[in-house]
Length: 364
Image 1: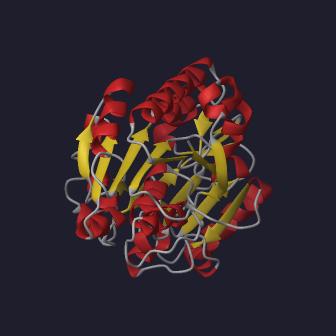
Image 2: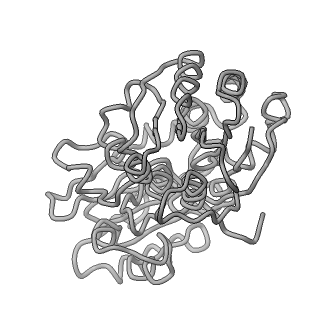
């Protein structure tokens, strides 16, 4: 792993800097553009998985590894795509995980990917996106992804500003990407989730997962064939994935849920909300019980060590768990209300292992 710690905020800042967007920096030294930029995000394709399986597909093996990037904590889609869309770290954009508590609510969780109509996405995530800023500067910005994501609260929060082009299937998506890149200057962001879905259900390296990777290889091949000459095609991911073999159900044969009012996050990155006044004793209880099986830190410690980045907004601090638990190795911490859903998944992510965090930046 590179000692330099670059992430998705560096990537989009660098790409948009090459398109001459003010207030951005080319920290990855990607250099000047021919004013057509395409970014393909493959959900769940960590560096480890790419290293192990890309050689089975000639088009993937032919890609140039430009940099090894790291996903910010938590290594999960909602957080990573928000970082990519805004160009700032989670402590600033406030999308701190798969589920977090809505402050001053009736102890309600916001699921970032399913959303909640009572929460205004533009107020929840206030930072102007790089897409919005680029459109204002005259770049034609398009977002090509499945039709079902277009009107979602998450898209409005993290990726607003782009012209959304709903497309399903490899051929329709590749054609839409090529068409959207005809103007200059233009930027297209396109997202595929089939690999992540296969990893969750069957595990990284499974037959279903390899079938999904074959579809991605086909998509990359078609995009390369169809886009206008001079287009730079970047390929990256939002996180990797571990195949879990160990699980612990919170509150089952343990006292971990004493004083806990709400369980957020996901099995590899838990936000735990605690009865007022019981925070210190609960953190101590979790640390003693879990030992070296998980890293357990309080909200204050998470802020002071920069877990979500060096700057944490007031909104972010309010949403954060009173306790944050990050399992080591491949352990998952299971919500007792979601045992069937969480234990039936093979692949998980959200944590801080190299497998979950390291993601490739590739150039086609």
